[in-house]
Structures are given as C-alpha cells and as structure tokens.
Image 1 (tube, rainbow, N blue to C red):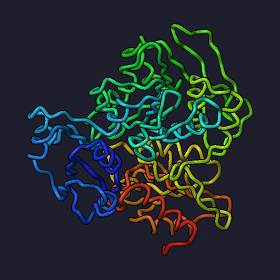
Image 2 (image 1 turned 90 degrees about the vertical axis):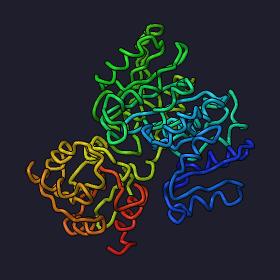
Image 3 (image 1 turned 30 degrees about the vertical axis):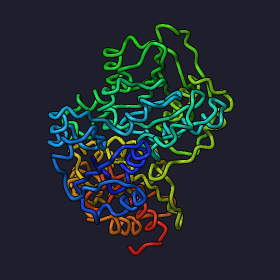
Image 4 (image 1 turned 60 degrees about the vertical axis):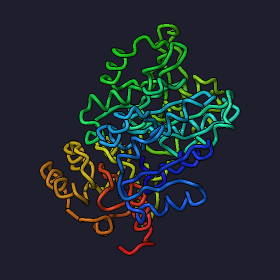
Length: 449
C-alpha cells in the first residue's frame, strides 16, 4: 500500500517478489504521477492497482505492507484488520531478519545527519566488518540481508511514522540514539503525546544489555524517557561543553556503569557549521564509542564529514554572498537551529505548506536575526505579518524564484542567504529535494529567476 512518487515502495516490492510472493501494489495516485516509480518495476510480475484503493485488495490477501506515511485511521487498513490480515512495514520486515548489530537514530531535528555521521565514523574507525546506512535515509536494505552478518553494523534513521508500527514486531535497536523530540507531524499523529510515544518506541523493547543515547539538554525528553524506561541499563547522556568547540562527548549515567567516563575531543574543527552539528557529532562519536570504535580514528573521521544535501549545505558563493540550502528544514525548530548556526548578516527564505506547527518563534527569531525575510507558500503571508509584528523586515514573495530575486537584490558581500523554510514543500514542489535543487540553481544563476 503506497508505491510513492519517489519509489518508497519499490525496494520492498522487489524484495517480496524475490521471496516468491504474489504482489499487488495499490496506490491512490494516478499511473501518470507514479510513472517514475512504476518504471523501476518493469521487469517484475506484479499487479498494479493505481488511481485509488479497492477494499477487496486489503481483505483478500495474506499480508499488507503499508507505506509508513499512511495513517492508522485509513479505512482500508481498518478493512484489513477486520479481515484479520496482518499489517507490517518495510522497516519491520528488515529488522526482523537483520543479523547485524543495529544503531537506530530518531529525533525531530538532526536524525539524518546523526545517522550519516555515525555511519561515516564507524566505517573509518574499525568498529565493524562492514557498515550499512538505511531506514529513512538512503535505499531499502532488504536486498542486502543475505550479505549482512553478525560482524556488521546497520545504522538506521527512523522516523516517527516508521516507529509508530515497530511495536508490532517487538523490536528496538542494540544502540538507540534520541536527539530531541519537539512538536512535529501533529497533522498525522494528532497530539504531541502521540508523537512522543511513537518516537520512544525506539527503546520500548530494549533489554538491559543494550544502550540508549539521549541528548543532555532536553529535560522534557529525559523526564519522559526516565519515567517510561528507567530500567534500561546502558543510558548515555551526550552533549557539548563550551560554545567555540566540542569539548566532551559522553558521560555514562547508567545504573550499571556509572564511573563518569568522558571521551574528549578538544579543539576539533568540523566542516559543518553550527553548535547543533557539534551536538550531532557528539551523538555519532558516542554511538561509535559504545560499539567499540577506536577513539582517535573516530575523532579524525568526524573532521571529514560533509553536510548532507539540503541540510545547511553551502551551495554557492556569488559576489561575496554565500547561499545555504537547508530545504530539509520543515519544522520551526529546524529553522531556528539553522538561523543560529549561521554567523554574520543573514537574509532568510521562509514558508511553505502548513503542518499546523506554531511558526511564531521562527518569525520572532527571524525579526531579530535576519535583516530581511522573503516569505513564500501557504504560510508566507502569515509569516510576513508575524515577522513585521516582531519588528523585522519581511515581504511576501509567493514563490521561491521571486524570493531569491528579492534576497539577491538586497544582499551585500559578506551576507549569507539561507533557505530554511520551517515548513513542508507540498503545494509548490514534489518534495524538499526539488525545492532545494531549484534554490541551488537559482543561487548559482543557472536557472531563470
């Protein structure tokens, strides 16, 4: 259920066929809008039921594999449950069969970077025979199952959607990393409490021999974690001392191992900007330490980590103006983090699809931090009003090309222009990648403004 325009269901469909299953793919989108994904299935014997779901497909089957973004309130999933048909997900199928040690990473902001940093460090610090990166980042790892053995480490970025259904298989990773949990996807989960509960599924089934790594400066998260999972033995707090450079990585607060060990990495300069990336690096190094990585090799490895696409990525410097693509910023917290990460004068592009998040804190910081905010999309006009009400300069530009024009017109050498929308891309773009790619082309002057 849910092939997806960007091929989210392709990997699991191919794997299921390889296991001998008779596969029907159901998606509400039209064949035309799914053409790229369908093309990746051209060599498979599958039944395509596109342009809408049929209840019979969900009742007359042995298993429903659901796209994580489909809500539990779907009447078609209700029909499957009514017919006693089990429902699972691609990630559940994978973790049930994975023989390697697993690192699961979740959080509202930073989970992609932490997962990628962790894999980057483990690959270079002799912590495993082989390191695999997957989950909500990269490709499906189902087809790699025959190659993954007990000596390997699998790093999985896990979204709240994926974790929502992980209790169905009673799974938690060997090492769980929780970076932060702030309100997000409330249009899907309904309440923050439900969203938090989904995130905390990452440790719900951990046994005392496994480790949980929790950011040290999130008291609400710590309180909920300790209340629900105080019996997990290996709990590691991680963080960063000092504003200029990372000083300390981990401190054990485990009931079993409470000798207050601290892994230091004084004076290390990262190639990615911002204190939040120092915290992300602390998480990655802590996970690597728990898995037995060589400390010196790990520190050397973290220095070479480059920003992921669309995550505070420097994409151009033109006429002394630096342009940063942070299109993956789809929450207020992400945009606030990005604004605080950029030093010097700032021009900002905000706005997009409304996920029912409170954008007031973003507007207030933009008024203080940016000397101009170009606002776009469904939330653009409200953001203009909020920025102006907070004493800032803002203008509704409608779309991204116009916003880039207005920022370029106002920018001076030494300025930074930051696309960090705080909102989803839907309505004007297929996804955040398309938004970021257009921004990069516009910044370089290789697209028509």
